[in-house]
Every structure is written in structure tokens, then in C-alpha cells.
Length: 307
Image 1 (tube, rainbow, N blue to C red):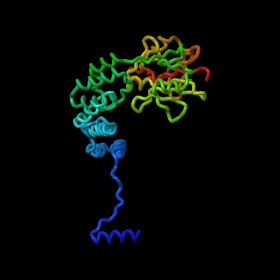
Image 2: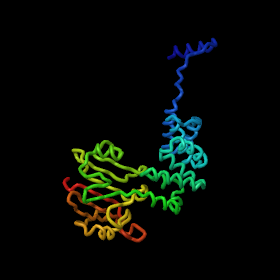
Image 3: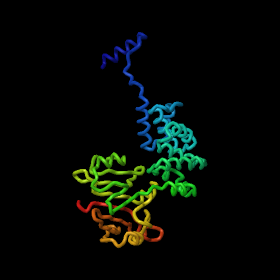
């Protein structure tokens, strides 16, 4: 090491070029990953500054599009809505079928006062049968956005029924006893850590989870009714008059008296109906958790009685 330093010093003294061991410049892919790490740490200003010099006019190739999309998100989260709008318009124009940047553009448009564009984007997402509306209802301005009569009309118009049929042991056409690979491929539900479950999400939140036995046959559905109600376009299709916010009295009136009633350690109420193949649990929160002081439906569980 000492000889190398002395040799370089001699070359410099003679005015001759010295070899250097400079690292090659980072690739666009590496810079994008660095920016994503910054964004994950809420360092949106740094992420945007890192990506902006790499934004190209042509977004036809994959990496150029991803850089622009990430820059648009960073600008949005930094509160630079106008800049986010400028970037995301081009991103969405290049790939209109990708939902996430479209929802960011919708939110930026709404915050900037371009309500017509925001409504049009939201309707396009619903028309595409999109099932994850998490970003649409959690980005800044979402309370005013959801209260808009036009948004309520669109949600009603494009509502998607989530069909639960206990008598046939099925939810959305998936039957208890079906094989895990078949369900995963059909529904596009991600594997949860290589375990015995498949999980569907809206944003980072679980909406429903499917559990399997050792033979990889479906034995249980669990649905989070609060997340399905707030973050998806699904409506509950279980029995006449029932919705995601039904009370125990509503459910008994529609489904008939349950076979069993129990309570959890924290006071939640469980009503259970037995069918030829499965059992159906409706789990309600403790009373006094809504504005009217009533118990609220929190979870639906359909499971095999042969477990």
C-alpha cells in the first residue's frame, strides 16, 4: 500500500496520469432504489432531488417510467402538488392502466381544485373493476373528496357485490375445500410469507385472508368488514337487507336465530349459524362503538366444520 502511494506521488510529480480506482457511476436502476429507500424513510425532498435529473421526455421504457412515477409520488408527499401533477400526467398518459399513479394524480388534481379531472380519474379506476381504493380515500383531502355527491354517486354506480353463500360454502365463487394453487392463480392473491394462508389487501391493510390445511385445501375465510367497507368498492351480498355496518339485530332478522352466541375476552359478540358444510361467524364490536351506541360488524368468518 505504501509503495502504491509513493508510486502515484512520483507520477503526479512528473506530470504523468495516475491510475485511479474510482467506482463506476450508479445505474438508473440503482439510483431509483436509493430514491425509494429515501421515500420509505419519509425523505421525500431528497428522493425528488435524486430523481428529477433522470426524468426523460420519453417514458416508453420501464425504468424511465418507474423513475417518473416515483418522482411524482415524492413530489406529492412533499406537498408539491403542482409539480406532482405535471409529472404524473405524463406517467398516467404513458401507462393509463396502472392504478397507483392514477390515484396520486386524482388526489393532486383534487387538492389543486381540478375536481373534474379528479372525478374522471376515479370513475376510470372504478370502471376498470379496481378493487383497491386505499390511496383514493387516504391521501390528503380524502374527507372532502368522499363527501362529494359525485363521488358518492360513482361509488354507488360501480359497487361490486362480495357474494357470500354459506349454504354452498363459498365466497366470491371460491368454495371451501378448493386447492390453494388454483385459488391463488384465479384471484391473484399473494402468498403470505410462504405460510398456510393467502391474503388480499387494500393498500397495506388486510381485507380478507384464506387459510388452508396440510393438504392445501381451503378451510377458512376471514373478512375484515371495516377495511372492505372503507377501502374497496365491495358491498356485502350475504342476505337481504345486510351491509358492512349491520347490527346484530339486523343480522338475526335477516338470517334467522343463530345456533350459538358467544363473546370474546374483550367483549366482542359472536353469532354463529351452522350450515350443512360450514359454519358462519359474524363478529361484532363491543356496544357503544358507533354514533348510535350499537355493536358494529367487524368480521365475517366462514369455515369448515370438518377441521
